[in-house]
Length: 226
Image 1 (tube, one colour):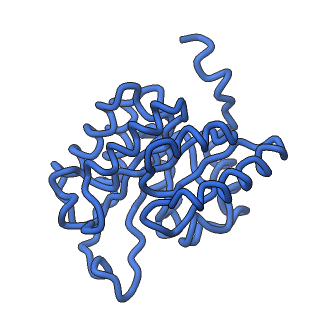
Image 2: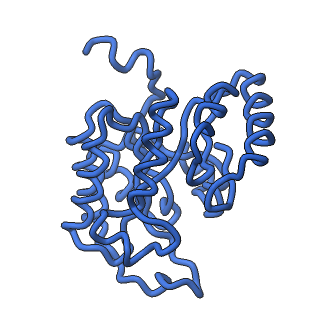
């Protein structure tokens, strides 16, 4: 994944982004970009450069959104996702739980994602990573069963999406992660870091995968019998 820390790119930034995307594609790798709010025509430029996925999370339910984010509106995110789809890019879109939201808010997040037509190919479900000095540093601890429940509802409502167990795994026990897989998560973000947050050690992930007898899945094979 290639990401940028801004509200959204300016036209002059797109040329730099497309060059990097082309270089990554030349290595034979799949590309995913997260660049914020897009202006008209930018999604098409990224698609032409070879971008496969665009990540733009909803973060939380529309009813809870104003309690969390003040730099943009919920509809701004929806508009960018519309541009991404129109350009023919695949969508990576999910949210964060554990931000003092209610169960109804978590249901609202999943409902918003499930109501996309077509539904996102990739749905990352993140658990809040508390950072000292930020407004949510003292957020109420979310019971682990609520996180697993969110994974399960995402799986039921978006049966063909890849439900990704994402940020916050470093604070999850093996048992909790195992329950997430049983509830329907079928992917993790693997490696040293997920953008700016730490990930579990790679050897630890491999141990867990082996314990659970999980096997790599090929997207081409996934729907062969459907």
